[in-house]
Length: 246
Image (cartoon, rainbow, N blue to C red; front, side, top):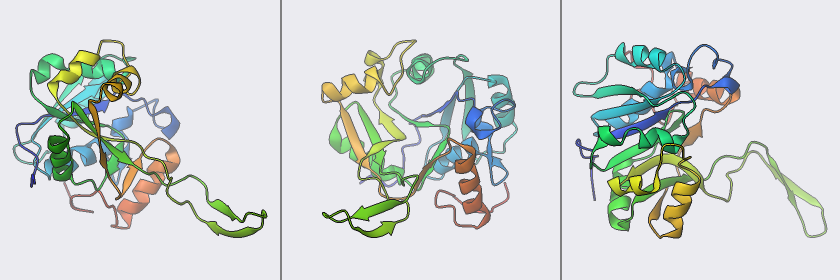
């Protein structure tokens, strides 16, 4: 069992989002939207850094200049380097990763999105990937449903209600572990979640890592507010040190 992430494995964070549905997208890119007074990308980097990662590449898009200035101003943990790379304003997710190929060389790496947090144990993801022996291991989660559900009997009687249960289906939760041969299925214009991952799945080269703990994607203003409420209450499950001054 791997106890911590190998320090030599880079972490790519996809940071091209505009965040228009957050109400802040016209002034700051999505990864700079704040949770607890700190940009969400800082939460993500520190989540990985606390578990052993040391080198981070941020695949920037809209307002890459603003993202770069912001991350350069952050006092990162000792030994951690964070580099912001402009991968184009309208580039799709697979294209952004493709543009980082020369930065990664032949190194295996981790990849995640710049808007998702979780209490995922990355050493377990690393161990799952090594045991699976495939090109990519994708963390899958069962999200909390947006609405409560009505429970029905066979005669259509309503027998009860459940408030926002978890989905019975698994979805892509980010937090991926990749081998360098993933670039065989990428090009400059592709969307990672479509043809590339579908091709890997068809070829038996895509593995899953099930995460049953906390996971949240900051897609809307409502999502951002919920994450801020968790942080302010001191109950943020993903936090390395809740309420700690940085």
